[in-house]
Image 1: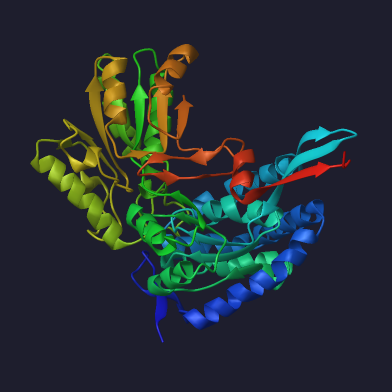
Image 2: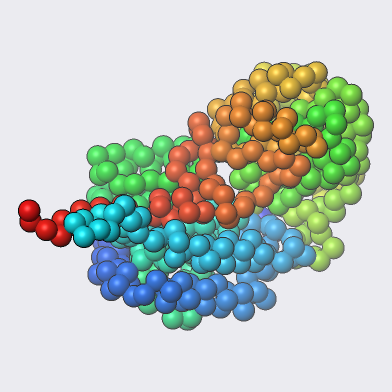
Length: 461
C-alpha cells in the first residue's frame, strides 16, 4: 500500500500520512458522486448556495485546529490566522452573484418563439489543489462548482494532506450530502489514470507547469474541460511619479509574505532610475525587519518554506545570480534561524538582468531581483520578457498611463498601486505558461457549467 506523507517544514517530521486509494476505490467514489449529482442539481439554487455558506461557516468554527495545522504542514506563522479572510470573501461574493451568473439568457419570448440559453452543471468536477494557499485556492472552484449543481471531488497536495479532508468534513457537517463533496487521496499515476478514463466532466488544477502538462496529456482525447493555473513570474513597475513608501511596502510584502510562496507574488521589480536607489535602500530595510523562525511562535513573522527542496531552488537561483554578477543585499547572518534547509532568509538582489534565472524562472520564495529602467517602453519590454503571465503591478497616480501600459502587457490581471490580491469580482486567469481558463467572477460560473440552448417554436405554421 502506498502511503502519502506530509513532511512538516517545522522540524522535518512526518506530520500526517494517509493511504493512497486504488484506482478501483477512487472510481467507485467518483461513481457515487455521479449518482447523486443530478439530485443535487435539482435542488433550488438558493438552497445549494446556503448549504455551501453553512459549510464555510462550519470551517470557520474550526479555526483553532486549522491555523496550527497549516503551520505544521506548510510553515505559515500562526500569527496570520490562516486563510479565513480571503476564504470567506470569495465564498460570500460568489454566493451573491450566483443567481445572476446562472440565470438564463433570454433571446426571445414572443407569441411565436421562446429562445434562451441556460447554464447546466458539468457533472463531476475534479479539483486538484495546491499547498501554498490550500483553502483559498480550493474554494475558488469548490464554492461556485457546488452552487452551480456539480458534485466535487477534491485532491490536495501531499504537503497539505489534511486540508481536503477537513473541508469535506466541515461541509458535510453543515448539510452538504456526503457523496456530493468528497476528498480522495491519490498518487500521481492513479490520478492520471482516472483522468485518462474520462471519469470527470471538468478538471481544475493549480500547480506547476509540468503538472499542467501531465494533466493535459492524461486528458487528451477525452474532451474533458480543463482549467489550469500554473507558474508565474509576476513583475512590479515603479514609475517616477509613484508613492515610493507605498510601493516599497506593498511590493516587498508581495515578494516575501508566506515566504514568497504566493501564486501572484512579486518576483521581479523594475524601478525608474530617479527612484531606484531610494527604492532599493528602503526595500532592504523593509525585509530586514522580518523575524524568521518557528511558525508556531506568535512572534514569528516569516516561517520556513513548505519543504527544504523548495528552499534549495531559491538558494540555487540566488547563488547562480551572484556568480553571474548580481549583488545580494541582505546578509543571512541577520537571520540566525536560516538553517540551510526549509528556513530561508529573505533576499533582495540588484545588478540583475534577464540572463539570470532569478529574473526569468519562477522562484516561489522570499527573494526578489530589482532592475533600473529609464522609460515605460523599456519596462514593458522587460515585463513581457517572460514565459508566464498572471499579474503585473503598476505604480503611478496616473490612471490613463496605467491603462495605456496595461493594454500592452501580456498578463491576466493588471494592478495599479496594489499587488498580490485576488478580487473575486474579477476573473482570475493567466496567459502563456501560466495556463488557461479562469475562476471566480461571473466567468468562473460559466467555466463550471455548460451552455444549453432552447429553441421552442410555439406554432406549427
